[in-house]
Length: 456
Image (cartoon, rainbow, N blue to C red; front, side, top):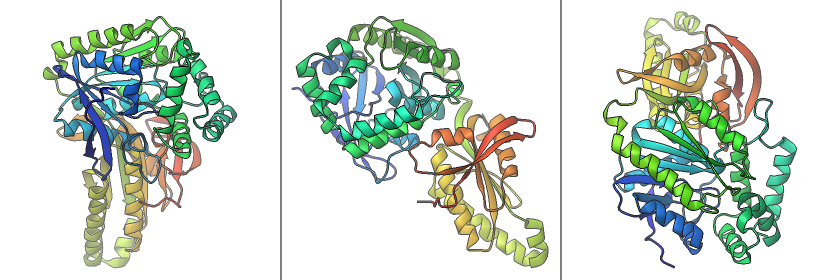
């Protein structure tokens, strides 16, 4: 078994991510791992190895195990999408890659979608192979699992972790053309055991089912290829048709076959489709003509409750001193959570973040820090496509965020449904506040962050 050298890089929060560099092609291609991953053991699978060698024949292929999986560090809790994006950034930085194409597959491809929308300046192209934007059933998404079926699947996957019979059942849906191969199933059992623990794997699958990135798809501004096999038994082909319709300018291709895994079945057709697309984008180099003027961001608005009353009670001198301390503490928390101050108007702050969970925890930290001063605030958050104007963010998403904070009660952190959908796995609980009509921006489903949530 010829295994490429395994290297490690550290993320900004101190976790070690295992990665490999394969090939010396002119363009960088990141293969985003699924929930079962181990950059050493996977090379024992001849189909997987041949597929990766094919991708590496025209690229510098970057492989990695995301945090919590395979050879990478185990975090204290299930990592949400934005922390998994940090893993990709750490690998890109470690190899000196300014821009790379991303290749996401299956439910775990949601992270590639979020990365491309959030960091378009670092992405040359996006390839999505059978990537569902949502895991659970909804009235406007009939392809997801019902709640009871999802719960049963999660419980069974933990109870029957790496059991040969259970793996064989999954194989019938994920890679049916080789599901009867005993050698393949033996490898799958082995790889599952060396990817994650039973509890961790169940938690990762639960998080994937809770994710909904449909609102992110229209914000993708990088060239995108959507691939799907017409007979896929694990993710229906209609899912990718929906994805392709929602991503502006996406190229959509359906391939023959029934396997959900790209390196099983006619893997050559998948590799050719990927190669033709990313090489064409690399030759055309559209990023040289114009820099990204829109990104996905989370905006945070805060303001002090009853500020006028408080200012009149304290007097100008004491109120000014309190405001200075207020500003200092808010800025301290923005720095801690990688927030970017956009504007300060009197007693309120407007900031942006590259991750919604960080934004929520920052809001919680700000609330707690200001409570020590006897200051009560309200906060509102929304995630959406923002225009980049003179280094600052603007646009409709910003207006929505401002309307959300106006709906918040004293000491309440209120978020849009979009924010809630993107923080699956963060451990942040919410309380439903119902659908509200926000001035000039229509109806939005709002949720309050539970008061039990801290900044940790």
